[in-house]
Amino acid sequence: MFDFDGLIVDTEWPEYRAIADIFEEHGLSFAPERWVHVIGSSWDVDWISQLEAGVGHSLDRDELQAQRRERARSLRDPLVVLPGVVTLIDAAVAAGVGLAVASSSPRSWVEPHLEDLGLLSHFALTRCRDDVAEAKPSPDLYLAACAGLGVDPGRAVALEDSANGVTAANAAGMRSVAVPNRLTRYLDLGHAHLVVDSLAEIDLARLTTLL
Image 1 (cartoon, rainbow, N blue to C red):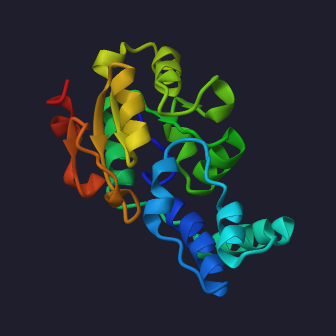
Image 2 (cartoon, rainbow, N blue to C red; image 1 turned 90 degrees about the vertical axis):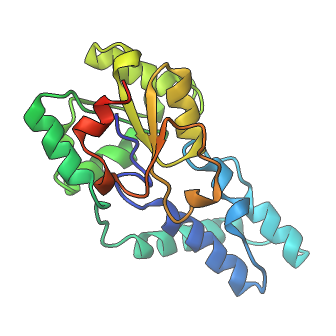
């Protein structure tokens, strides 16, 4: 089971950096620690209120959101698959291992990107924020993905980059592998069953030892 944002592609750094750039344009800083706790779940950081508090007056929220979206889009263009992802997917497909994506992002975000990257067809299914009552750290997404594949969670491995994702996988009864990126390295990922610097460090044999 693959997470998407921050695990298959680095979409998280552009989102953070876009907001940090806006803060800097107003003479303020926005440290990664103020953002990373939402990674892997639904956003709950009212960054505009924090910005307004810092400058001492209200701002045009629609304009700020437009600036954030455009800046993030430019930073992630082109979107590149992270190291080790394609090799691991190809090996799983060749071995007949069922693959799924479980993401706290909406399907309208996840599937078009996977399609553009030529990866969507390799996954038997995707389970996204639209499919469950609660996003990660709730186990709902992973339980839904396991049910869709017809696999016992105890025989499945989740590949994650965030603390919320690892928590969700563990709560579902799965084994979890954490692959911290340049943002999630600020998080404590010690509750994962395995932590590696890159998916290029692992193969199916190593994942099997977790089960």
